[in-house]
Amino acid sequence: MIVYYVLKSSMCIALLWGFYTLFLEQENMHHFKRFYLIFSLVFSYTIPLLTFTYTTNVVDLQENLQQPVTYVIQAKEIPSQESSINYLSTILWIIYGIGALIFAIRFIKNILNLIEKVRVNENLKEPSHTNVLLENPVIPYTFLKYIFVSKKEFQAQAIPKEVFLHEKTHVQQKHTLDILFVEVLQVVFWCNPMWFWIKKSIRLNHEFLADQTVLKQQFSIHQYINLLVNYPNSTNHTVLTSAINYSLTKKRIVMMSKQFSKTRVAARLLLLLPILFICMLLFNNKIVAQQKNINYTKTVSSTDPDKKIKIRIKEEKITVNGTATNLQGFATTVDELTKQWKDNELTEFQFDVQIMNSEDNFVQQLNQVYRNTRLYKVNPDGHDLIPPPPSLPYPSAPKAKKEKKSILPLLSPKVKKEEQSDIPMLSTPPKPPSNLSQSEIDEIENEIEQAIIEAEQARVETEIDEATIEKTAMEAIAEAQMEAAEIRAMARIEVQKARKIAIEAAQKAREEGMRRAEKSREMARVYAGKARKHAEKVREKAMKKARKARDEVRKEAEKARKEARKVIEEARKEAEKSRNSK
Image (cartoon, rainbow, N blue to C red):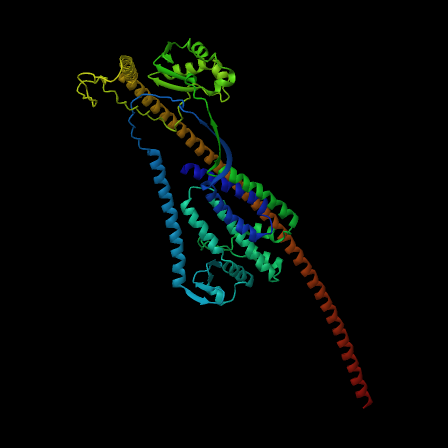
């Protein structure tokens, strides 16, 4: 049961996460994506526990018959065997417990580490958050309402405003709660290999939300992209915090330039509905039909004793209404008994069948012979003379039939040695009353003799062949052991198949991750090249403007020097004229 639950939940998560990666991750609707990722986890681990029910109408045909068909088997009870210890299940539980303990210790250690940083370092409270000033240089990251920053950079006001606003968005939108929820689930379901990609998708969507808030504050998108590309990277933060991640920068830059299309988003959300419906059908616990009974009673008014057939079967001897026959003559005997009635009257026949110490194959052969009779062919229900016993989920021993105690005081029942009969014995038969006539006395004596004969016949019929019962019990035990061995072998095969499927899925996921990582690096190189070319163009334009300005300044200076020389020359001439005049 637990194995099926883990497999169903894992496949459901893989399907929902695959749909998110293919159709939703690149869409600019980050708040819905945050809800979808958390909902997919809750849905995947809940749907295998649900049982869906629906109602169907079942006609309950009840026939008011005086004597129903009986099917009697006499056998001893088979003692149940003690179940063997399942060592494989014990080993798997031990491995699961060790893994859960490791992840729990890791989770608690990370929380204690963050609490220690808050307690030891200086805290500066602000209305929306609390700044924790760390001595070592780190990039800012958040946990709950705390933003961890470098003390030196904070005091020098060297942290860009865009970065502070980015981290404040993580605090205001409570992204840490999503991370804590996922980490707690991973402690319980650590064996699911999908957790690495799920956590990465949740963190990436948190970055999308923070970037969206920064750009809404009228910051330059080009300046913000340059900040993300050139901002230093650091690993001095835990998995429980939200920090600027350089490996996700390329996807964030692509998302900033995405245009929101209502038509495309609506189409993809409509595609999500059949995906959820398929998950509900494939991965639920089970679908149960609740039967709504419609009672229909059929009353048989005929009480004709000739329409009651008594069949007694002991081993391979058959008696029909007191007439002995064999398997080959059974159909002929039944047709002889029913030939005086029409076809529509044969449906009112009642059977009283008792079987003692007969093999199953003989009963099946008797049913085959009965299907050739006229009585079976006109029967609208078409049931066999001896219906098969109800199927059980596991082999069980048939209950032994209790011995019937004789109620005739005139019958001396046979008892085994060392046993005492509980029936009172009469030394002489009771005398009839003297006021009866001779014919009445003879009639009573005939009835007593007939009752004695019938009782003796019933006692003989109810005797149990102990050797046959023991043989049947041993065969049932051997058959149960064989079925148990087959079930264990099938379980081993299913476990091996599941392990193989899980290994193949993990291998495909690793290959897909490597392919996506290579593609991401290539796109990052392309964007970096474009950014460098753009920077070179800007620098060349600036250099041209600087050269032009410098040339213009030089020309203006040259003009100024020429004008200054002219003024000086004129001044000299005026001075010379003044000296000559004197």
